[in-house]
Structures are given as C-alpha cells and as structure tokens.
Image 1 (spheres, one colour):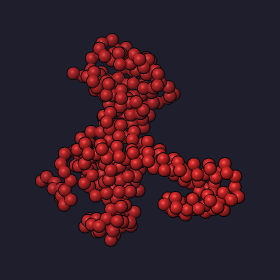
Image 2 (image 1 turned 45 degrees about the vertical axis):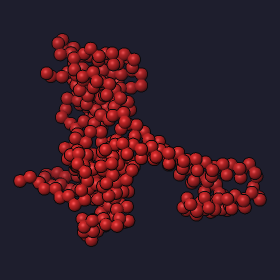
Image 3 (image 1 turned 30 degrees about the vertical axis):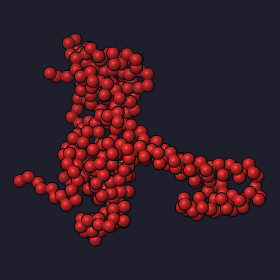
Image 4 (image 1 turned 90 degrees about the vertical axis):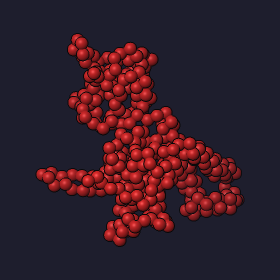
Length: 339
C-alpha cells in the first residue's frame, strides 16, 4: 500500500497541511487550528507525514504514530533546500511535502522519558550558566572596590567573609547586605544542580542502556544519560561512524575531481553532547590510570588535542555499538570483519 505523502508545518496555534488527494488529484494546502489537528488525521487512511524536527515535533509525531500514520522528522536544513521562493506557512508546508518524499535519514522520534531527561540536562545547564554569571558579576563588583578575588570557587567562598568585613567599614550597609545575599544565592544554585544530578542518578539505576554505556571509560553520568536521550532509537544509525558524524566529531570533507580533502571536525549536530564526549575523552587522556595501548600509540605521533577528539570519536562509536547490538561493554573486544 502506497502511503499518501503529507507535509505539515507546525506552529503555536495554526498548522499548515499540504498534500495531493490521490483520488481527485486536488492540491490541498490549508491551515488547521491546533485543537482540530489530531481530529483531522484521526479517520484518514495511513499517511507518510513529514515534519521539521523542531519544538513540539516529537510530541505530535508520537500522537500521529498512535493513529497508524508513518511519521518522518527531518532537519530544518534539509527542508530549506526545497523552499524555492518566498517563505510563509503555505510554502514551508509544500517544501516539507517535497522533502518527505526524498530518500534521507530521518530524525528518531524520542519518547517522553527521553525528552524528560533532556529537559533535566537543559535546566541543569541553565543553572550552571546563571551560577557562572553570578560569580563573575560578584568578582567584577568587588574589583571596583579594590578587592581582587582568587580564581577558584573554593577560594572565593573562603575569602568572601573577610572581604565583606573589610568593605563594611567604608561602604554602605545596603551594598554589603546585597553582596552577602548574592554570595549566599550561590549555595542555593549548588543545591538545585545537585538535586537534578541526583534525579539523573536515579534514572541511571533504572535504565539498562544508561548503565551499559556507563562502563565505557570517559562516559560518566551526564554523557550516558544525554547520549541515550538524544539518540532515540540507536538502530536508526547504520553504523557507529554514522552516529559520530551525526554528533559532528568526524573530519569535514571537501574536494572535486575525485580528490578528497579532510579538514577539522565538522561540528554538526548537537553541541552539548559533542562537548560532553570531548571532555570525557580529555579526562581519560590526561588523568586515566590505564588509557589503553591505542591512546598511548596515538599520543606518540599526534598532538594532544587531536588524540582527545579521536578518542571522543571512538567513544561515540562504542556507545552506538553497545546500544544497537544490546551487548555489554568489553574492554579488550576486537571487531572482526566478515570475510
């Protein structure tokens, strides 16, 4: 049975739907209110529905899949190539309709649990950014009064009481009290970050996939939970190299006339997961007790940062292999290609 391709441009209140009626040949491009969206597809024959992988797309993909439709989420960059002229809802829906019929790798539809874990990561990241802003703001203001604080957070906490006591002798009490409140607020932010990490550890205990990849050197709590949540279905990727390319830690390629030039990493995909993998690889290279023979050989012929990125690439491939094949991590495992 051939599914009817449908392009949907989702928005906050009004969704634009584009398709061609197979019986009459009529081109349908109409807006649908958010409240009537699911009702419109409830009694229709199964369709191939395409949407951009943007805010709310995973929710609507899950709802449409329950009705028996096949949903294909696509990167906005891929859809943009099919929008030839003016950009509006009708043109975007038509571009999505064209794109969904092309052979391409879809974005895996995430479960609600995976999105919930990503939400925890985003909130933790926001708290850490706000905490850093608070610290830098406090340092800068104290510098205006001749008090230069040490770099580390522990030294800041150790020196602040004495600094505020000295400044209290010559500055207004309202300013000193505000300084003290801003300094005490850092502790509250620490507690909020710690609470989010505690909830992540609880999920790690219950999730088999997170526990499996946590055995890989350099893959900690944050990397393991983020990788499982962002991948969606690991079997969507045909190989570990494709997963590494999806993250953006493979060389960028250019060339012409059969000549291929390799450059630095492409840095495509999710920046957050790529950063976690590179930080984990750096900890193995610089602080690992037994980084392994492969790392030691790389260090003899490549710069340190190149070794770190190469190890991050290897970690990404290992994560994909462990999850896709549902097998535990083995330190000395050697992949044997079939004859």
